[in-house]
Length: 372
Image (cartoon, rainbow, N blue to C red; front, side, top):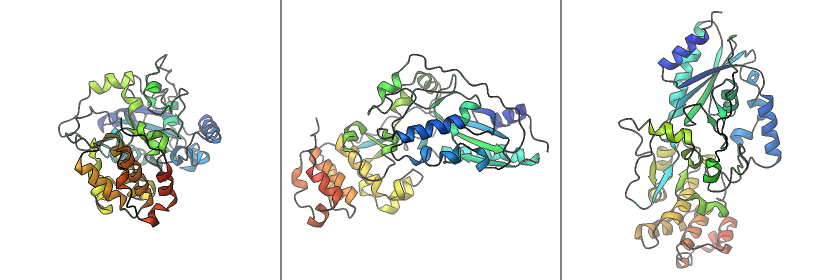
């Protein structure tokens, strides 16, 4: 076996557009497992499978490759300046990490790293964006950055606008393991910025309050967090936007020509008007609960209830259309939206069978705050 040296891997990573790379051994992430299990016991997972689903597996690299010896962890930036929103009053914000297919791009680059290892006789498995490896813990142990108070991995001098992925290999590489010291200090801007208080304890996320997770969860969107959602339809970057390292770094990295202006904003009304096939064609790479488009409409209705103008005919027509949906979760949130506008009359002709559906009946009984 003739694996590449650390410097050769670093050169390759830079040449293919990876922004940071680090090495660590493939021992178990026992601390991460303990923390995950403790937080899950306290209910902080909020049903979040990605992080909490199988900590016995995601913290043990030998489950990925039985003879694993080393892990190469890479980061690729997705920092972009937010483009100005369209003129429409019903636009909804999309999290930056899906403006472009960043994980697809990262996967291609990680495969190049893996191919270099394979050419030297090693086995190598690419892992990213799934529940097979605790990416942030691996990145931390590989010396890429520190855990911020918003739980994101912060790379010194660069911030947290990065997607992370790894290559697990049986090659014996020289680990770095020089962990980066905490750079947050006394700053608590991310905790203050969180709309729902999901970061009340520094470095600990309460999944039951996290808007980004709630937008990806199935069922009814929690009524107590609907107003806080504002215009977020997918993802929530609030805790990252205010982070000082991110502010400095993003300002120095404007959108490239032909950047993601269209992907940063979507029209909530257009989502309610689109067919299932159209929604999946446009947004199928998002984490849509159970791959069911009605959850996109659910999110759009909460946004519409927060930003739509009650006197706008397009808004009213969208709510009326949603009230006639065959999906109870859509009708339930349309009821909430109508009542946010003070338009109880729109609900009066609701089909009796639909009105008796559990989630719809619950909304009909709920007191709804009017738009201020």
